[in-house]
Length: 461
Image (cartoon, rainbow, N blue to C red; front, side):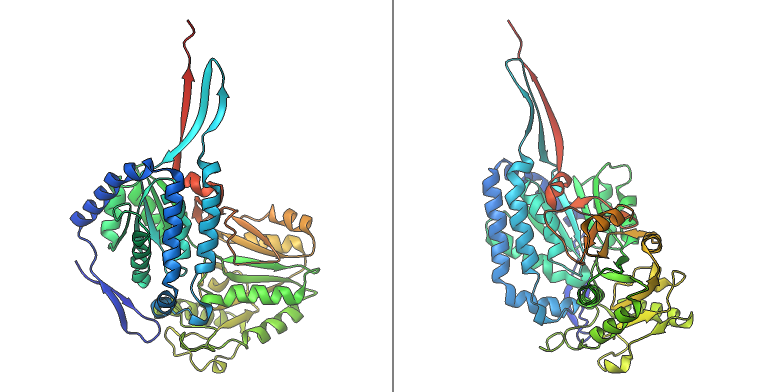
């Protein structure tokens, strides 16, 4: 098998290299997962929860190593630490609701009938995780899957090969059996072959629309449950009654944090005409405070993109938009670390419209387009004019107005006066080309379990 290389965006070096499993070895790994699952599910729920939480605690102990590894693998500045705040919060919440969510729901318990709905694990859960938030995105499915009694096979992105190894190391050290949670390195062909062979009870994939289509094609006819979080082009809308400074600070952070490599990052902003000029002026000033540089430098607030080919996509979108009449407001010379490769200067574009790729296709980089709108109706029309639907951020002083606008937007999550955040009590979901399925909240447990009905009748003598 051809080795998979992890090229670090920090310096272009080969940071790690792993050989993918052969098809035979991959099948054997799945067989071990299936064999181990029944005994794992038979353990008391409280024991499974305790072991999962212990695994996350072990992961926290690795923080100094993990933070450096994330920087080497995908470029996030070390000043931001790891992803432990979200990892811990999501683990704690899913653990807290597990007993109530997974408990049988009684319909009748009388002297004649006992009728109830139970939930049971789907068997082996396959997680195909992305590189942009490599721990958080894995935890979203890993924690509820294990707690619910499934075994898990994890395939991490080639850009973050070491993440799966760290997760397995931590969870195994906590006492979760090696066959119950396995990290594997697979190529695309073997991955698709395993799915096509009905190897799994549920497959969770986070990645591109093309990748999601390939997963669906592989699973066709298998009736395997799929969770697909795919592309996004999340909008922000600043109404006339918005807190301008708060809107600028949150929306621009949502656009630029992690070099714009966030599933729910802000990629397009619509501002009411009465606030437009002031918003743009403040947004430009905000971006000029960023420092692009080596992620190990303490003053770097913006690191390289995860791969130079990802940066090329963004550069091409910016260049095409400018050629079509867009106006760039950030001089790249202000960011001398921009090397034409993975290190990319942030950019704000105005005079943009929806004929431009930068306003319609996922950028997944540190660029945002800003448009002026005259009213809510125009903003709603533009926010819905997208093939994607993950989140939308509305800036207003009124809950009811935000809810009324939100009801008209085709998206998975509506934010009011915040952005780029996952609440573990609310399900993470999308519509249109963003995909389908849910994670987190009580619905996250429904994805990794199946309902089972019990209709028990007493025979009267």
